[in-house]
Image 1 (cartoon, rainbow, N blue to C red):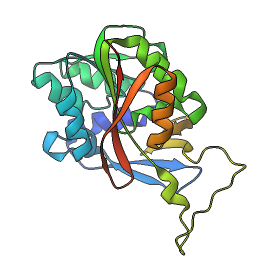
Image 2 (cartoon, rainbow, N blue to C red):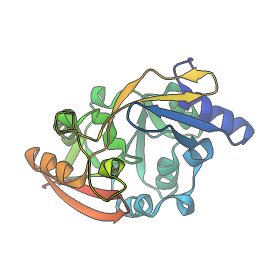
Image 3 (cartoon, rainbow, N blue to C red):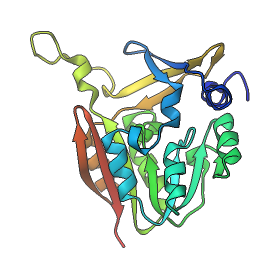
Image 4 (cartoon, helix red, strand yellow):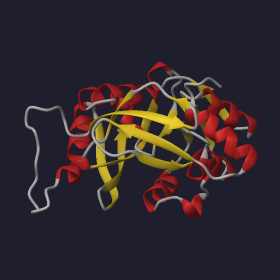
Length: 235
């Protein structure tokens, strides 16, 4: 692990000690967010309802993108599914392999293996698009990895609520980029990632991008500002 892999270091620290700790996510647009490391090790019962629903919808050969410590991969592997995990964190992938899970340290956009029935982009995994402009490119690449009839299961959030005023009005700089375009940096102890672009996309924009890519979009469930979507490639 390098000093640029806070997620990998956090995963191994918790795996070895089981001591709670936090990953800090700093942003250019909002207050710091805190990810308790133990959340990366959650079991099915501790998953949000949207994630539980995604687990129930999984079928066939599965690609888990941004698998982290593998809560979804472990659950699905235990259910007998053929699961392949990818993550940009070498530490995370080393941990997954230590759990006898199939995993590769690779960027999603460099991944070329095909024939998947289900692609998981959970914990706002669609955020790897970086910005709204690149969303279609992300979906087009995902589409090349799917079998006919395959599906993408992704969750995201409409973060327009961050711009709500106290009087109930909605403030938005019309000259700014899409309000879901963020720049983040992750921190764990003395380990800091490089800054990276990340996307939170409302369902309407996701649905439109999916249609442009030849995918059929369906909002499966929603909770507060969050939603789970299923994007299907026709058989």
